[in-house]
Length: 360
Ligand code: SF4
Image 1 (cartoon, rainbow, N blue to C red):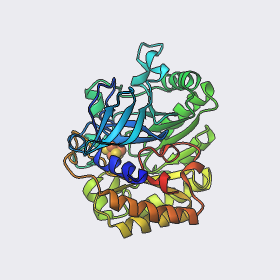
Image 2 (spheres, protein in one colour):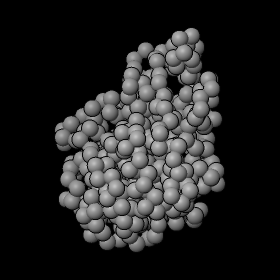
Image 3 (cartoon, rainbow, N blue to C red):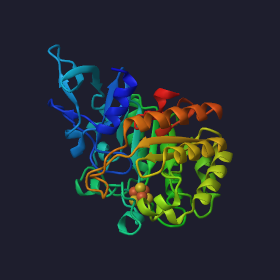
């Protein structure tokens, strides 16, 4: 079977894990979740493993007689798979007694990821909540804490670099307020982290702040890349699925993109584009082309139906549609000289939640 096809099908259909594994996947949280990092030919890919649809997937993870893991499709071995072992920093606790893994987790193989504020003012209001998001669910399961302090983050980042060779860090956040959207707090966290772990590259993610000049602070304290996530290029779809964020217009997002590219440079600003909310193939490709022209890397991902969200029972997009979109977006990205590997840090650099890297 073609490897790209397997990757795209795994990301849309998920895989059932039929063998005892210490950790079957990350549950809840912001962004794509209910998934696990699979190493396919050494390349990390986040694959849904926990949702109900993953239990119905034709793909399974089994163990061969030689003790190695394999992905099977309808009972046939199609690809070997390895799993990233639990990082050493997971065994430690902060000075105030909080396990490091409640502060930040390993994504892919060398990325440290954290949700700085696990609370979001939009999520708390039913009429503003993004329908795909499970940010506060992981608080209920006690797998994290509601607000990570700059010192806690710095302590964990330093250990992750020293013990596990982590190279970059992603800080996303629930929206903290309606003014700077949390940008100042992200800057404070970055300052503390860069003092203790000066070589770690950092990407932060936020909504466009009221005053775009706030974005400058992030650059001043050493942030390397930023993510400002539009998700859909259709205002109608945004109003349906991300009603709170949709109060900030698409034009305002484009203004923020231009402003941020002016500060961080081309390829160091990215935006999540979610396939499966209802945008057509052409509108996604055209929207991605427009942001790419500005120097913004469009990070295209399939919708991940996450347990406990209004979208938990919808179907992830057809892998054939994903392939078409990846092919066309990657071609445009090349035209504008953008590539995932040119991002200094962040989701675009890691690439494991998307299949686009395989097309660039
Ligand atoms: S703004 Fe939307 S996606 Fe972001 S944390 Fe809040 S509810 Fe989730």
